[in-house]
Length: 306
Image (tube, rainbow, N blue to C red; front, side, top):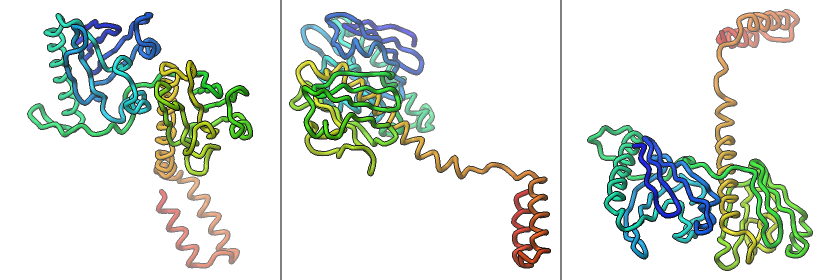
């Protein structure tokens, strides 16, 4: 498609297989959108497109992400305000006809993406959208950090660190000491918006890993930092949570793939190596250390490796 649709606080650039969303950097732009900068969203990461009237003489074009396709929306878990939704493009009402055109074009592109995903022809019926098996939209890149009420959270791409503040951390956290939690020891992240009551970011350790319990009050969980007025704002803590979540899923995928790689066939054995082993086996047989049956069975096994 290659066209550009400019709205309020954002611009959408339509490519053949994705939409590039660029957010303005200005005092009127929601801070989360400014912090995100730009995001490339593949068509396969989307489930649908809507167009509806907005507030004060506007229309809103919105792309709906598939479950599991975007670590940012997965971490947010429905807690974002409309103004901070990175999938909304707000346009003046006079641009409604143009918005309808792009909505139809994008819907057609999503249908084609579903047909390719399910191996269907142009006349086939695409199956309903299912949760994505992997993240298709990239999370903000590490390193990332922010100040919570009770400590400083840092993420270098592999390890999350919590350094406690003596003015805010509970005695439980002080006794546990500063925390360093590798993503390989985590199974997820729980983010509760600082704009809600008792906001926090909690790391969920895998069974038997980490210092946190993954339950109870975040104020007393060494695997969590709590938010407060001016501490852990959405535009800092949510991208942080999304980046950690993406890294955790990536580490889990490697754990699943590792046994497959370990047991994958390595090819036929070198004939010279087999000959040496048979020769050594014969010496053991002549010395009476291997029975006739053991010699014959092992020799047959070695020859089968050629």
